[in-house]
Amino acid sequence: MDTRTPLATIVVAVDGPSGSGKSSVSREVARRLGLRYLDTGAMYRAMTWWMLHNGVEVGDAAAVAAAADKPDVVSGTDPSGPTVTVDGVDVAVPIRGPEVTGSVSAVSAVPEVRARLVAMQRAVIGSGGIVVEGRDIGTVVAPDAALKVYLTASEAARAARRNAESDDPATDVGATQADLARRDALDSGRATAPLTMAADGVLVDTTEMDRDEVVDHLLALVAGVAEIGSVGGAAASVAARSEAAAPRTAGEALR
Image (cartoon, rainbow, N blue to C red; front, side, top):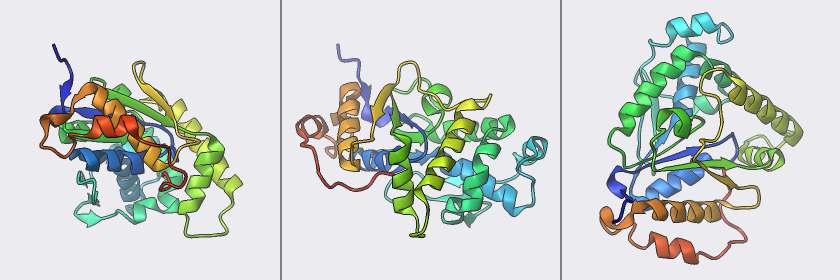
């Protein structure tokens, strides 16, 4: 008896620290399989942007908690063009700025913020058919996900990837690595939903892998738990393609 999950209802949870490749990999896996995609990190960034934009002291957990139910955060699920808005305003660009990046861990640690956004994320997930990426998907948001992947990489590799994305060529990789270490400590050390791998998760170290190699690896993992042919024909050859995939020497960068 085949106990695999129909692709139409599958939930693929992808967790991991910044720079491990969650966003680019999750989007591409969702796109190739014809699934929806949810970037939960963008939702926390959007909440942080609203707090900063409205003068809430992000270092004051009580003030953040009191305002957590005010912004209307909406995240699109099209992997070819994901969107995020706050009160109807497109914030996809400003939420990636240094001010939000420096404050998002503090805002994300507030239990009231997490409770509200987790409820919203579960509503988006609904009956499945989605790839969800973040830091607590396999452990908190979707603990019953058919596949839970934890992407990681060395601090040096993650810092180099972050710098490669930067518009400032003078960005110091050492400073980037220190900031990643700071965020890792905050995210893994918080009392509510810390960053950690699910007990039944699959660890994937992307340090020596490019994006295409990681995507192929995740597609093979999905093929092991899903009925690939259950949604049209778009994903019918995923298992065979993934198993036969050859290593690449110059694939697209991870982020």
